[in-house]
Image (cartoon, rainbow, N blue to C red; front, side, top):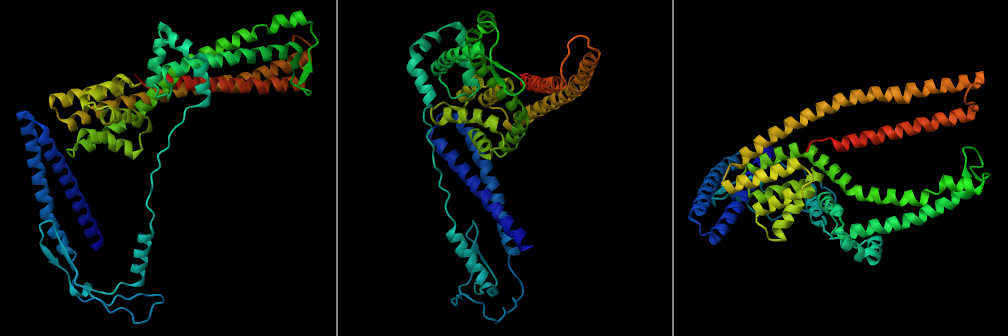
Length: 442
């Protein structure tokens, strides 16, 4: 069909455009290279691209011949179309291919543009150009205030051994915090949590929280006895706040590692397909970022591209630097292997093909292990969340009826059951999330 031929012609012209761009890049590289071995390699690639260009160019005239329409077109209807603009001037249509060969078309193609064609042209002219707007991220007010208060103390604390892993975790987790700023945020948040703990201490010193209305009541116990029960709140709350913020970047790093390991097999297959077109290796990473199909890996590739375009590193050095700062050991091994392959002049498509097969096999094995473990967790969930609460409710009801042991009202038993089941569900979900974060390989 004519539509298929047009698409085929478009595809071949687009392919020629890519080859010409690659030839231009190679010729520009030859101007700056003095090593005879590298000049010989690039010359071989240029000759290969020239042969491919000649082959594609020789196929275009055959496609153009199939576009010629044989036979006279039927006369259009004489019924006037409203708002129709007629172009009376007829110009013969001629098409030129890459070799400047004129391919004549049938004179019957010189028909007047109909109303639909004119509307299409008007619509194309009215299409708005997409304007890309760059957004500048401003510093967070909370972080700025934390730096004002604790910047000096934070700078001194960066030299302590316990804060060295925190710096690596911040970089690998792609958190937008400098090392000193994040320590300042930890100190400021811990400072605020101390006052929050004091507020809670005085609140629970004089008030109780109950399950029935009114939920908040005055304390009826002795003040000293109550003090011994709640005095720990201002001490424990800051410690928990400091510990949670200290270990948060490590948890983010593990989460980023798992997301990368999930996307890596498929991204490597994609890279293998792209590398087969003899494209510049740097462009492979730009193409994968532009697809937006691999959000976790794209963050690492953006860092790699920035090291090349902004910091001026060569590709091999950028690959090694990105591998050092990568949260995933599998991605680091891939980048280091790619750097070695480029340095030794190896075959990139073969490298990506073999590495993608290995990663895909590991991914399948990991999924099989997760399926087996999920079956075990399902049995545990049924036992803890369904069977255990029912048995506990029966025991509480029997104790109430018999008058033995702890005797609770019906409303209190219902409240205990609802809170118990809710707590078990939350605890089980947290366990699954931690289990998932700890999985996913290296």
